[in-house]
Image 1: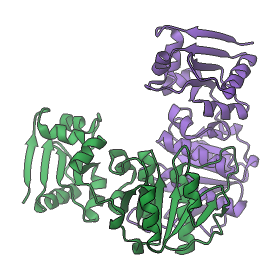
Image 2: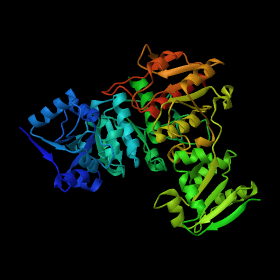
Image 3: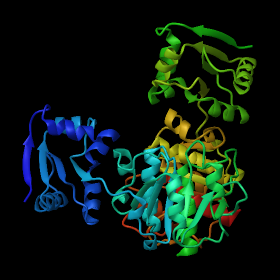
Image 4: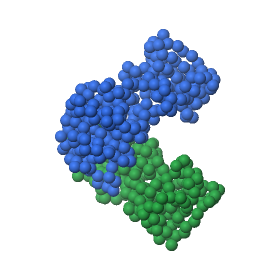
Length: 267
Length: 267
């Protein structure tokens, strides 16, 4: 059985340790990340992922899902911490914190952990800087039945509070890998896989393009798009109509339009 | 000709007035909004929209687009203000502010200002709370050649700095209207228009749905989706595949997938 305790002081080291998980360097050092809110934690539980530590407001409305979560965490040997709303506000940095948060161990994000036979569609993002876009791509991946999201080069941290929140739980259902382009390309070519880029260069209409599974759909950085060399290394470059003044879509939007199109072709 | 001046003190009333435009109540009181960055301002200029006030860093790299913008603003009778980087940082609330910002008059956002014959696709958002989502919808609207974005009930402010930034200039190309549902529905029914909702209720497959122009594509609030009564008032309810655990997409993503599908049908 796990342990249960109540934190009453702001100076308790646990408060500082939890607060630190909002920063990437501390997440990496601890190998842990935070997910906030009962809905996210319930999604995680439904995926068989339990927090190592569950932090709850002392004063809270009773909720059967929270009671079940609490019991599961304790059964799994985890820790349940109760704290005042003020202390929760300090941990989350918000005036009105969610009444519950969980600390999870970060997952293995090496390419070798990916099983490409698991799905027909995979999303790939290169130098994606916005954690909200990253989380939205995870959410879209879940919706289209993708296997996961591969993050190329320097992307936002998929375990940031913002990315986890925007993923709406998909951080627990989608596989996530992080790699440099120089690692990714040989890995991709070591097995079956069609690499597809949204592109304006020698591209074919995205509606009639010959998508083939496993299909890796790649979008580029929010400001610069994909490097030309990356586009040229793709098996297929597809273009979406741009009827207005702008020449690009939001990265998460481009990925989603492409993913739904590929889904319609690949089933 | 307009005027040109240099602000040297933090206590200058213009600094406070500019800073205040980051808050909605002050934007509404002044009827003005801020757009930051040379790219946004150049987009605006290309759409024939010039800022009433152009604020620039005293020390800046010369740029032909900025020189042209400056000349146009002065010719149009506007004001050019130069300020130190410190003062710009105070106005924008950022450590590394963009070297240029513009103050624009807010546009007329009444339904009566919309010309529905102008486009085949219109986007509609209900109670959309996230300014980034709102800006992304404007950007998508520009990309699919939509006429504009109609904001129903209590939405984020389309003139917030975040929405303007996320729109990537589309705030200057898309028409924007704000209305209560009780005003919108009679307006819609007073002319041609198919109202379409992304929905799970008695919905048809979004790929084969009978879209008809002018087509008004509606998405709902980020957490709650559309109220049932609003969905039932639609001419068409369409559903997108949801293959994973989640039962919804990000609102801006749902709007984009739907908008690109409608574009493929309506041309």
